[in-house]
Length: 140
Image 1 (cartoon, helix red, strand yellow):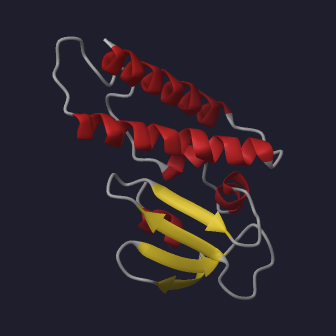
Image 2: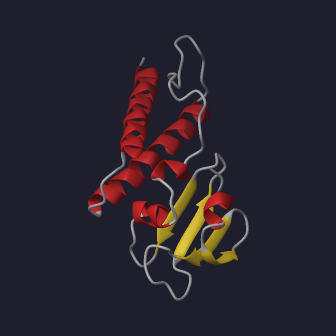
């Protein structure tokens, strides 16, 4: 999903430039924009409601899932690192940042008492596995 998909479902969208927007939060009665959105270089859509709504509540209010905030991967069943491949540190850090974002979004929702969908839980499991793989690669 791109940011445009989510933005098309929101009201009061204001472009803040460079992949950043403000909009009215669909998870609560919002009179002025309290939802901040940002699309990262890898296509991940970061959202934050300044009134305190959880990410899952926000995406569910417009008929989406948390997993829709992350770029679709066609190779998600493959290990992100193949043995004997040489990876530069920047590639590993980019992968870690993306997977840590998945963990952070899930942790924030769980802390707020919001249950993860089966798809979101599976994506969290994949993120943890990828983080472990990177740690093993760096440690070897």
